[in-house]
Amino acid sequence: MATPARPHRRGMRSPLVRALVSPATRKRRDDVSGRPAIAGDLADGLRVGTAVLLLTFQAVMIVHARFDDARYFSWAPHDAQNEYVIEARSEGRSLSDEEVGARYRIPARGVDPRAIAHVIGLVEQYETSRGAGGDIEVVVRWRTNGGAERTWRHPDR
Image: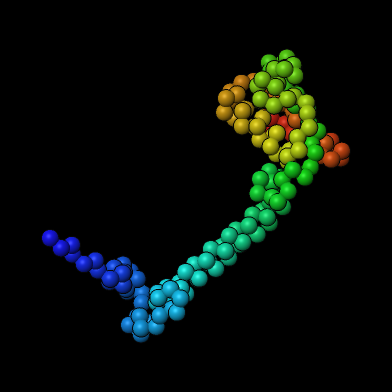
């Protein structure tokens, strides 16, 4: 029994490609690949469009990082040294450094190379989820690159 002949590759085009390629374009062939010229133009356009989209996204995120405290999308997110101290009081009693470290899973005193929003975010996340409803006051004091001391409090009072 003879095997049936396989259809020519050009006959296997998808309906989408056939709809996009006009009869005049079908006659014009790319010298190297034998594909219709429009297929190469479409692929080039997709490559250029993808590159433009990626570069635009990066530019937008760089501008966003300049105005965002967390700086997660910045080109240099570790450009500041933040010396911080976390102090917490629960029911009138000050928590020890070990208790604070166990509660927030970061040292009560330390230096963080990221933006201070990282440390504040960890404390705030814990207090608004697991620690919610508890009678606790938290104060985070920090200096960025040896500058003036700043303070953040939870809850805001």
